[in-house]
Image 1 (cartoon, rainbow, N blue to C red):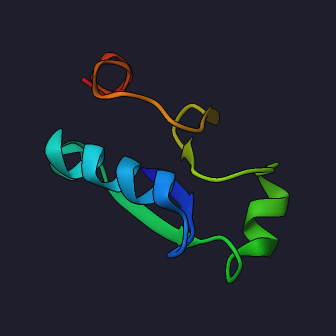
Image 2: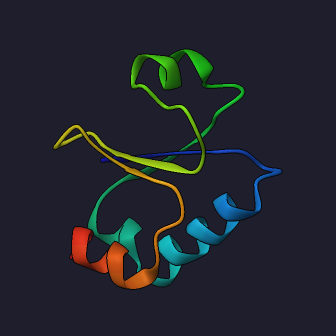
Length: 77
C-alpha cells in the first residue's frame, strides 16, 4: 500500500496524482490519498515534512517530492 500525502491546493501534488493515474499504479497496489492538513498526526508519525510525498507501507520507504514517470515506473513496476 502507498500513502500519498498531498493537499488540494498543491500543484505538484496534482501532477503526481496524474502520474499515478497515467501509470495505473492503483491497479498494482492500493493508493491512499491523505490530505496533509487533515492527516497531520499520521504525517507527523511518518516524518512527512513536505508534500507531495509517497510513503510505501511495505518497505517503509519514502519518496519525496516531484518524481517523474520514469522514476515512478522504476520504483513501482
